[in-house]
Length: 454
Image 1: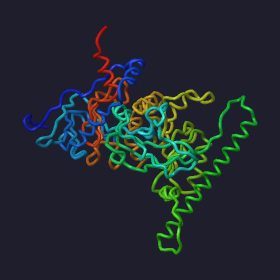
Image 2: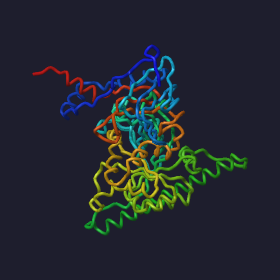
Image 3: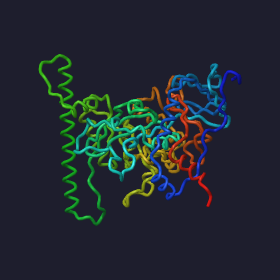
Image 4: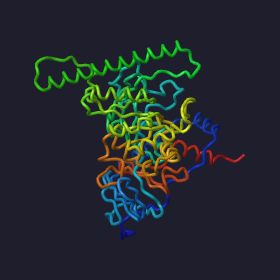
């Protein structure tokens, strides 16, 4: 592709380099001395207001949905991917990034986080993740998202551009939202809300071999009561949705509006999936029974023991959000269960995605997938599990998850495999705008790097 220096702005210098980690003491001192700035978010938002086009050229493009393109180009305009390929051409006035020796990947999607809902857990008011009670389907995570969270630019630094953020607690926690990691308000950040309804299938507590049988019996009774309560709630929600549908079709009668039941209607109709946080085989079987009884679409999340039912899940086309793989296994579990689970599921044909199940560790999403690679997950499946798979699971593959014409330009330009800790992003685009690598970590690094020598 021929370009003219007189018609294009060049951006040839890598925009980001990895900074050494600061000591914990330095971070604590800086955090105590400085107010929490929002310059990183402001810079990202200022960039988002720009409407100019971008061309990334001479790069190895990894679309995920197709084969690699050597020495290719990606044209970005109006927030979308306008063209992809070796012959993609720029227009006068476009900014050009010469990405010789670099790679272009889709932005990664964390399929389970608390981003925007928590900042400093030990500080009063630093969390807004959970409501009182067991049933809160009307609780929408998006309304509580803090666009000024310092964790958002930190997460972006590793190539994560979108995330499912969700409430927790109770049996029906509330509505998860898919957000892009840039925007002035929660509504600006939203890509799909609700993206899913978050639920938890009750589990009998552990206790090990030496737990008292009486205590185990009490736990089993409590679990059974919770399961029955969940079934009754779903039954009521199904009845509410059916009555609402009959009235909408012209049937006689009235229905008293119930906010909680209204939130459940899209779930009972199959328009919004239900994420079930589970771990054990018994929980998974319980969720499958609920899916059969009430006709709801389910997504399993966590599911450390899903590998035991891999063939069943594949046959039923039940997606599984695995991880985090950075946690420890239980004392009675196989040592490699958490790490090998994704590979077993993928080989069986189960569609998987990865979660960090956190806000502070969401930046480590690529390394969760990398750990699973070491235990049998193929590199291609690992990459899909943090890009295209989560987009397909949550119904946004028409605009996210791969590098294709017409999709939202959430892209990361790296110097190598983004799942390899030895490599890292050099440029990042969210919704077609170049986002600077400027976060609390980099600011503290620069500040203490410039401190006077003793």
